[in-house]
Length: 324
Ligand code: ADP
Image (cartoon, rainbow, N blue to C red; front, side, top):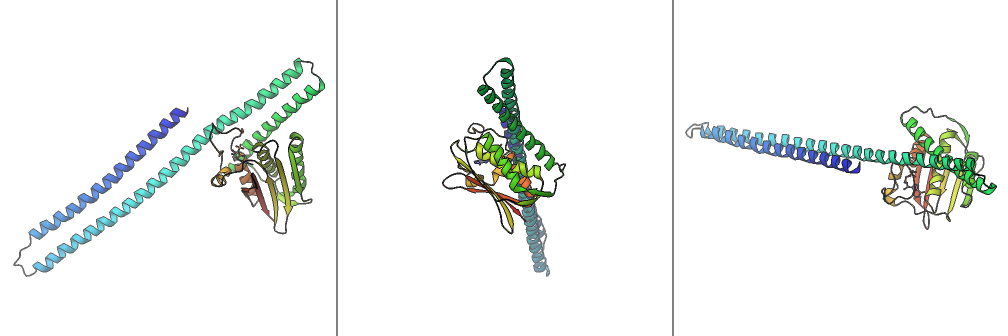
């Protein structure tokens, strides 16, 4: 699949550059030919002049002037064509590149989704079959059940991310505007994570009674995705901190981790659809590149901003600021 994609890309680039070169060469050829024609016409007219004619000088000047005017006209037209062609070519080049990149990311996304869907289903199936077929002691049963629950949680997040982002993008999701107790929402979302990942170190600073007008389901997805990433992209021994505070002007949610952080040049890109840092061979964490895209969309829909900064000594701080 990758080879055919590369050959398609090569073919498209080759056709593009050949066509562009042809157009530019034709333009230059047209410019030279027209200017030569102007020279020939002027020469022809000059040779028809009679030296003894008393109006010779004025006719001579008129011919020279017309020659100059024609040269200027063709230079102007040529330059305009050149600029328009180059702007058009740049536009097409960028649009095609964007399209190709999106197509490539979509392909990776489809592969990632297929994998992300199949793995939890396979694990859950195997665990349930083991529970049915074998008489296990209580501790083993609990372990298998909690592993199955963990996999279904992952499936749930994935399904939510895919469904909600496609509905939000297609304008089919009606965003609720209701009074949300953000403190309780964040507290219970984080508590779920603390239960799931009880061996991790957690710090929470959640200012009570912080309310907001918004959509509870979307806000929950936002919090879940940020905390999920903090868990996914930081070492098992590292601390994860969640803060919620409120000022007179804004409500601020922060998810802070001690992972590798995000390089400066990737800080904007991570919010793009399907964007994942690194390439298929270097990535270890599973994902689809939809989580942060959805977070930004949800923040936008709540008149909030989302940004990522560096934690010290390492890690990321994701800050969502809701204006009151
Ligand atoms: P996914 O996690 O499914 O790949 P996201 O949209 O949630 O997609 O994140 C996009 C990319 O941003 C991830 O692939 C990862 O490389 C990077 N990223 C997100 N959160 C963090 C984090 N807390 N620390 C380091 N990198 C992160």
